[in-house]
Image (spheres, rainbow, N blue to C red):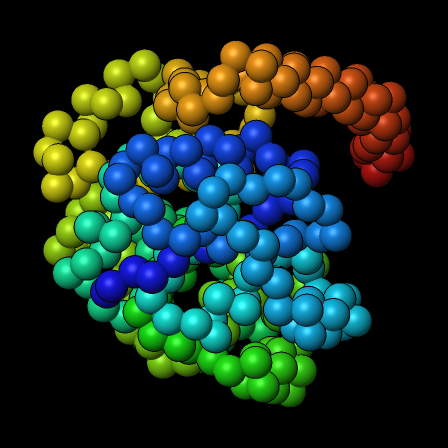
Length: 293
């Protein structure tokens, strides 16, 4: 695979994450153009060699169908030789070098061991009909690469409206099942670098709980080339978070930690607000158990 661009999805709300991702990419020596798909109508100033990239027709079409905003990333399927990452990723190694010997569709997540949020009631039978080992083909829609065009704009419209509406348009929890289904329906071979023969260590930050996380990367060939914080609660700090924070300047780091503290306060507030409802339910269940005796 000869990468030609790095693609991401961003909005002002994730600007600090984006900054860390972009700087980590450049720190690996990768100078490929960075194309930024807007998550919503918000914009912010981009660094050199980065530009906003929006398929306005597709964005409006998805919006008119009520699709999840992150489904905008499906416009990546109309180009070739790219690496897509969400903004909550940092690079540890140059993606252009890592992906050079590979072909087809490449991911490096661990969703094969936990397929939650990758399939729906509609898409699960489709995957299962293809193989008893279908789990090895699902992936996190926040990090993937392809050396070929998988769809045209028209074929995306057809798949979403005629075949996979429930998964690609109606399902509003996240974009992941929709992106998975569009990819697998294209027939492209899917390779996951955390599986044999590569056996790369986990790219999910949530798998590294202690301060000795680098001890897992003694074998350079198995060291992950990126780290992804998907699903990691902001209010629970981990030692590995320092790898992302080192790419922020003092003012940015201060703003980031303020955001984290705000998230923690909101989390505690949410728990406290739920206590009366939980207590009410407990009392109600207790009363019902008395009447049932």
